[in-house]
Structure formats: structure tokens, C-alpha cells
Length: 396
Image 1 (tube, rainbow, N blue to C red):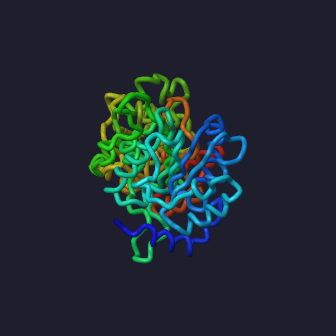
Image 2: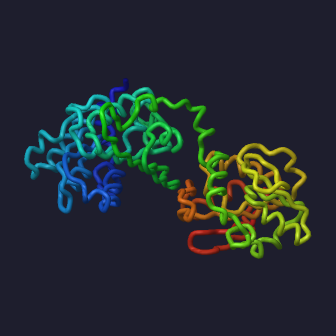
Image 3: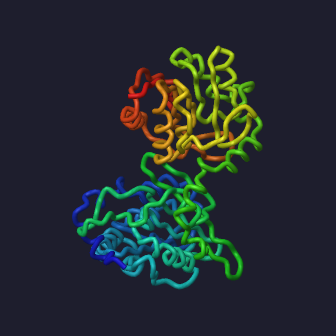
């Protein structure tokens, strides 16, 4: 096991951001979740408490909580105790400890928070930490935490990235089986809520869930799952229906049709309505999607290499990119670069209407522009509304 105490003492000494509350993932998250947390009561534990911003916030009104904290860094504990000196028994509530061995009895806490910590562990240690969290949460208690799904911008003194376990959001979801999650594609942060069940032998986390093979990540990826989108289409008959104005490819067609040269391939064609409209305009057109909702469309993964794309001259991809993680966007763009012209839109707001948060990749359009420029020549940008852009591009 790495010497985490030494590593994070060094980090606290040289990382100026660690002393600023607004730079703390935990502080931001509890402030944003105030309405959900204000009705809770009892003891709380913040794992990886750092300088104590979460503990300080939860110790004040309007909360009815008795916060405790642990951190592997003794320097962080010293500063947290100083920050919390106004609270009775602060020294006892703030302890130096590793999250794989928590110094508390079973079911001691009503709420355990753990922000930006678990990805700092070796993958083999995550199951142990989850078991400890499960042990100290009471029946019916709550876990609220976050993990980063990308590498850290900081390495330890040995040159090792501080995020020792970098996995996709789906890996963490499959591992922790949360009740609710939200993912911020810009910061690559996954927020996790989970309530501990009631009953004998119940557990917040099942240790058998804590070692998910990496090979499962792509297969279980929401944007790569036929079952998920098949269910969405089946449960929501209006989804992607041009007759209801729900097909963005058809709705935006007047904005990009003059840019296209045939033949045209629609990547992520859904029900095939856009392809039908393109054919009405005189284009030779075809479409491909991972689900089969039109007998005349191809079935396949648009983020994996597609054969025979060279016979097309234009590619259309409307309202798909925000459904993909970065590695999948890279695969999609590799396909699109095989044709001469591209027309695609990106939405950076939350998805609505299906009961699923499908927009897993949201980032500012300024960042999207840099990514697009690395792959294509941007011929025209069209702002559709504050949260959606249409790009007309050509291959370099």
C-alpha cells in the first residue's frame, strides 16, 4: 500500500487550491445539495475531510447534524481541528485515519460523505474502503459522494498520478450500484447517492460488486448499450418521431441541407426520418444506428470503425455527440473524417423527457470548438439556442 500519509502531507503543503473552500469538490457538492441534506439528523462522517470545509458547513444551521471527519494526512487533521475549535469535542470528532480502516463502531453514522477520494486508492483497495463505509453507516442511512473519472492534474513526488484508479462513470456505477447519480462531463465528476437498506445482514455496498472487470466497462456503457436505447424508444413512442417534431435531424435540416453533397450517411439515424427526408430532397442517403427502428437502416456502433464509409461524401450526426464519452467521440470523429463534409450538432444541456439523463458529455462550447478544430475545418457555426450548436465542417 502506498504511504498515503506522506503523499497527501506533501500535496497539502504544495497545492494552494487545498486551502480554498470554493476549490473543494466536497464543499461545492454539499452546498448544492443543501435542500436534500437539511432534513437529515444525526452523526455524519466526511471521509477525506481535508481542511474541513464540509464538516464546517454541516455543523452550522439550518442543519441538525453532528459532523465528524477523517483524513490520512495529519497536517490536514491539525488544520481541521483548528477550524472546528469552536465546536465542542472537535478534537475527538476529527481523527487521522485511512478510509480502509475507520475507527468507529458499526452503524455509527446517519450520513457518510466521501468526495474526490476513492479514485486516489489502488483499485484493489476500493472494495475494502466500500466495506468500511458500509459497516459504519446505520440501516436507512445515506452515502453521498463523488469520484473523478479522469486523471489528476497532480502527481506525487514519485511521479505517480494521484488518481490511481481512473475508470469510466459506468465502472463506478456498476461497482457501487447507486440509487442516483449525476455526471458532469466538463469536470469528469460523478456524484453518487445511495441509501443503506434496512434488515439483518443488509449492506450499503456489496463487496462482491467492488471488483468489476475493466472489460465490462465498454459493454455496459449507456451510450453503447442497445438495451438502454431500445427501452427508451419502446417506453417513449414519441421519441425521435418526426411527426411530433421530435426528430432533431429533420427539424434542423433546413439549416444544413445546402451544405451536403451526396451520397449522405446519417450516423445515429434513430427511426430513419432524416434519411427519408434527405431522399425526398434527391440525395442518395443511408443511416446507421445501434438499434433497429427502420428496416432500411444499417445496425452498428457509430463509435467503432465502419466499413465502406468512403462511398459517402457527407455525414450527418445530429444530437448524438453529447450522449458519448470522450473516447467514443474520438471513435465517431474518426469515422466522420472519412467523408468530405460533415454536419453535426451538440447539445450541452441536460436531457429531458425520457426519465434518463442521457447527456453524459457536457462541456462549454469553447472547449468543444477546440476539439472539433483538431479534427475538422469549421466552415460555419450556427447557434440554435443557448445550449445547442450546429457545426458545418470539412475534412482536413
